[in-house]
Image (cartoon, rainbow, N blue to C red; front, side, top):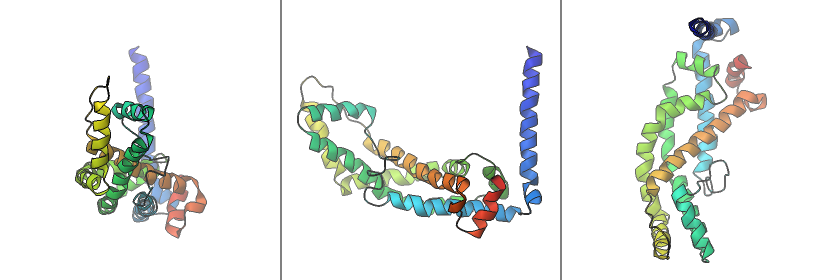
Length: 233
C-alpha cells in the first residue's frame, strides 16, 4: 500500500513539475515575453468587465438573464408558493423582480475594484492563468476581489432596496404571509442573500466572456489577444 501511495505521489509531483516547467519556459518557446502575456490577460479581463458586467447594470440585466437571474432563497420559496395559492401571484412576481433590481443597481460599484485587481496581475500569475481552465482568469479575479466587493455591495444593496421599493414590497409580502393561518413566520436576511447572488452573477458573466475568448478565435478582436491566447490553443 505504501508503495502504491508513493508511486501515485511521484506521478503527481512529476506532473506538477512538468506543468511548472511549461509555464516557466512558455514565453521563450513561443516568442512572447512575460509582459505581453500579462497584458493579454489584463485585456481579456477588461473586455469581460466592460462588455458583460456593464450589461448587468441595465434594467433586466439580472432579471432578464437566465444565467444570473436571482431566484428566491429556499426559505422564501414556500412564501412564494403560498402567496400564489391564495391569489397573490402579482405581489410574488414583484417581490422577485425587485430583488434583481437591487442587484442591477449595485453592480455599477464593481468596476473600480475590478480595474485595480486587473492592474495587479503579475507575470507569474499571468502565465499560470493562461495555462489554466476556461475560467482561470475569472477565478483569479474572484479571489482578489470577493471580499472587497461584498463590503462594497452590501450597503449599496441595502440602499437599493429602499430606492427600488424592495423593502416595502417585501415587508408587505412577508407580513401577508406571516398572517396566514398554519404558516411559520419568516424574516430572512435578504440584503446578505442578494449581495452574494449579485456577486455570483458578476463572476458568471466575466467567465462567459473569458471562455469565449479562449475557445472562439473570432472573439480575439485585437492583435494582443490573438498573440497571447494562441499560446493556449
